[in-house]
Image (cartoon, rainbow, N blue to C red; front, side):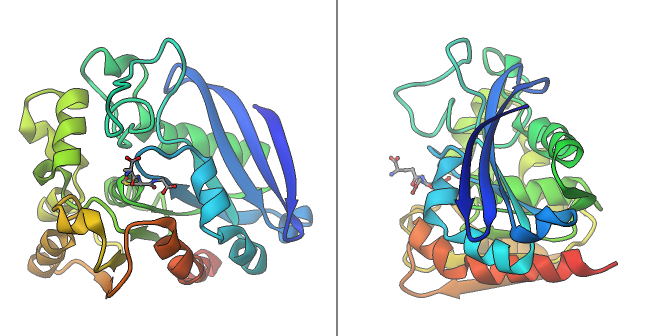
Length: 280
Ligand SMILES: N[C@@H](CCC(=O)N[C@@H](CSC=O)C(=O)NCC(=O)O)C(=O)O
């Protein structure tokens, strides 16, 4: 991997890398924040999966996460949201499909299947790469994300028991098989067999008996996409109740879907992950 940018921040380093991805068959870009502690010893990492229209840049400039990560001794790993490039399929007229909208699944339908393998990229290729090349403690990782990225964080943890020490999400798409964004992406990437979509849906994974891991979710009550029915935390909550699955769902009056909301609670999420990552 090639480092293409390095910025000093809070005593640590905010770096951006480019590499050729075996999963996505294209060049991928990601950012990593290394806290000051990483200069003397390997540190645990929190992966942040971003939402529709984002690159690795949105979270690093808008969430205010690096200050907390520096204090807690956590690395932040911030991948892009899809494969990109001239040879990569896209839907340029749509913000919610194609480049910038990988949905953290492995596509099985063309033209998407050639490159859209963000699930393998985020859960296998990227951790193996950064844990080999950077001062990170192998296997000591947690995951969080926003909206489409919250969906990605939830399904990554639910489908891979033991891969992440803890999981949280900001305004996640909780039940994509039942919302417009989810139906659009899953239909395009996976085809018309809606039964196959359920393997990529947090609510459906819990209904199907996923191994319990505590879920921490923050949601703004005045989120425009909550009102539109894209997020459906109430459906996830019901599934958790019915299946005795541990969920902390915090509803916050007045907050919308933006990075102002994420910036408000990111410190609590990182402290939550730091506690899980500190356990032997
Ligand atoms: N109005 C936007 C819609 C896209 C949007 O709001 N994207 C969110 C994530 S939504 C779910 O995944 C986001 O994070 N945007 C980037 C930001 O920096 O706020 C549009 O039309 O682009």
